Length: 341
Image 1 (cartoon, one colour):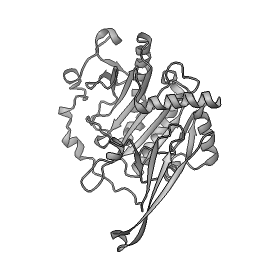
Image 2: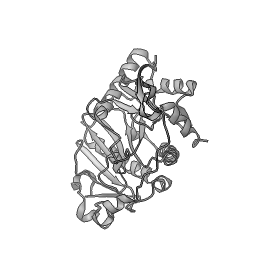
Image 3: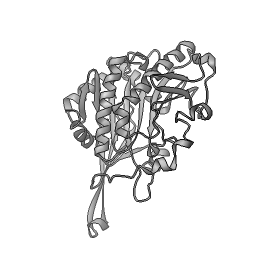
Image 4: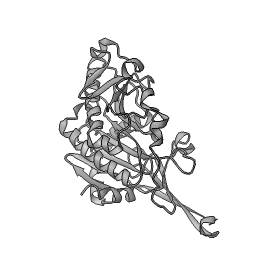
């Protein structure tokens, strides 16, 4: 019922890297087993990423001009209308939540998860800043859906560091909610529902069984969370996590603790590979689709490309909607497993 489909194409050229001797270029196209979206694995001689200088960022975006630093929040960030949450800004457990200046969805809210302007990437996960932010956002999304029945799609997301597309250096996590899902979120929900209707089984549960049996991309479990590297990756370091719950509104303290433990291991792996930026998205089911869907997370490592610090996304991603990766999911899983034991 679950197919891991791929196609390999080859092209020979004379490479300057090998004294213009014949070199066989190999491109592997993989189809996502749920959505049927394709990703391309570029088979090219690989070496470890060089460590990039990140200390330059606080000089480019100093605390005095940062809207998320404690001394600037009151004068530089937006406020909620009081009838939404009963206050203009939500403050809980060291987290401050404000409306996003950029409205990506009907509800677009930002959790400032640290008072420190530029904590170390490991410090963020070691201190549980991300899960603190998620915990507060889940509660606010619960309140939003109680008062607005038109909200169907919800996700919690993060851009960490400029290489991830973040315009604010200060650590933060975002939630979006509305009646219309993003292309990928909507496609996942629709395909999960179709799979369940056709086979009478939950795709996500079968995927866990398949990946556990194959042991090619399976990383490990923490509590009821299942960690793996998706077969058709969305980038060079793409790691997935599947929860036992269908809605992010149902995530409890145990789920968040398991997520926090997994994120610590993932970030330690990223640092070992000289990856200092990432994106993640935590996707929820929609009302009526709870039986066919499972909350799932995708976290992708991001970096600038040398020598000019180019973006690691290009026309393939932004126009063709096709993702590329140099590292195979199997290689990423092998490296990440070392941090699971």
